[in-house]
Image 1: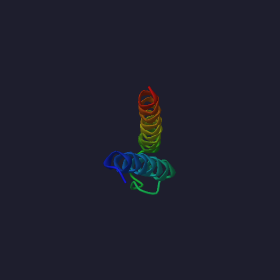
Image 2 (image 1 turned 135 degrees about the vertical axis):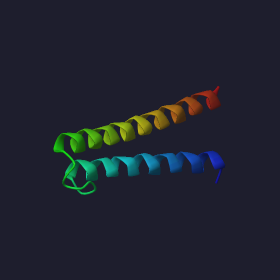
Image 3 (image 1 turned 180 degrees about the vertical axis):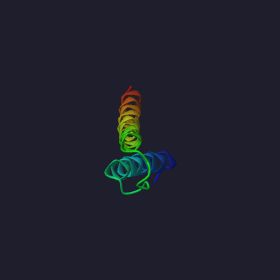
Image 4 (image 1 turned 90 degrees about the vertical axis):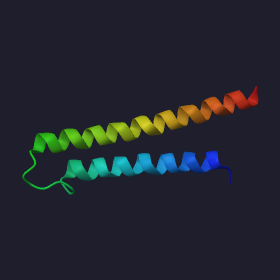
Length: 71
């Protein structure tokens, strides 16, 4: 397996993990109860949006590499 494929898979795993942490934070599973609900919700949404952004950018870079390899 090429190093580049391993790094791509690692990127997807990290992005998915960040998304799952965002869901857990939003649900109130990771932060203590004295953290305000607004902050917990906002932090969870930021994690989820960041994971979506990472997955999209990884996918776009993969597509771009496929296009350049064809030419």
